[in-house]
Length: 94
Length: 141
Image 1 (tube, each protein chain N blue to C red):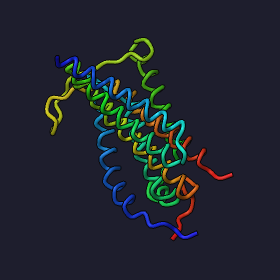
Image 2 (image 1 turned 60 degrees about the vertical axis):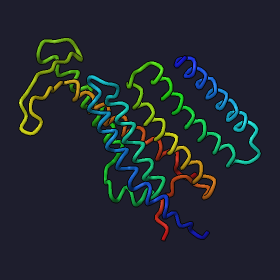
Image 3 (image 1 turned 180 degrees about the horizontal axis):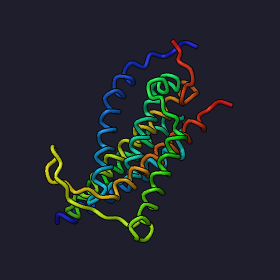
């Protein structure tokens, strides 16, 4: 029963990733695509967590932190490139 | 163009960079028995540096961290190859490793391995090359 529930939630997460991929492909504006990519990252974190509960191991918990950090950096870089047009500024502007 | 005030981003990044650096040092030292190692530790450090470059700008960060990242990558490759060549001095094949137990003042009984030196070289090479790549593809025309 427990394994069935876990496998069912993994299937739900795959459906969520597919819905987000549709939004990335179709999304009318750029912020929609960025939001969908961020949601894919969060869903991947949830998937890894459910996978490690299913296998009763804690070897994958570092993967969760790394995915979180990389998704955070990606979202900030996309948002900067939308707002300013430049990702990394060269000179200090006061 | 009027400069946007990103106070929230700067306040969050100051805490997040500290957490990311601590986590990557943990990953670097846990690489001997657990998942982790020099490559992913170096990637964590370069992720923290890239967050700093995103939030502030190249001028501010290179004033406070006066490293040349190209030279850092070269030193890392030199350390990694040097630990590989060092095994020739003990009549052992290339890249062979050893470990021993030592009594250190603070940590007590500690296992020290020569693979840690090789990992240090890999980490420095990864930091140098990834930060150099990011800085050179972000340059203007």
